[in-house]
Image 1 (cartoon, rainbow, N blue to C red):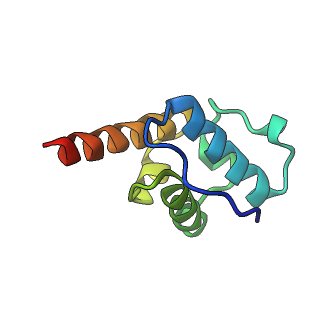
Image 2: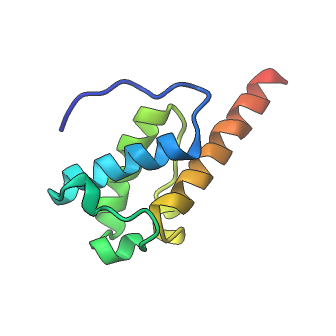
Image 3: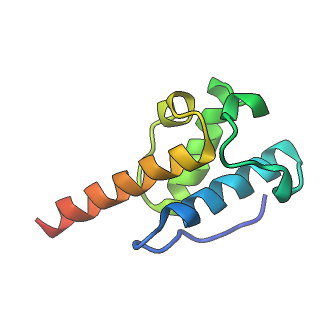
Length: 97
């Protein structure tokens, strides 16, 4: 695994999707171009064990706690990215209060 820092606070869905696609690529040893952001994660064999690892890595990179159920409940990279950006926005709103 390559060592990378956390993504900026003003993270977009595309940035999160890029990070998740990169993680999937590394985990599955697939070329990044083969990760389709609209395909259900289950098509890549993501289960509860791999979702735990992925959410830990994604949480570390994004700087917000992500429950593994997000990867299991949301079928695609794009949808997971939406949830992560929403969690970041909620965190930032709470911090601004």
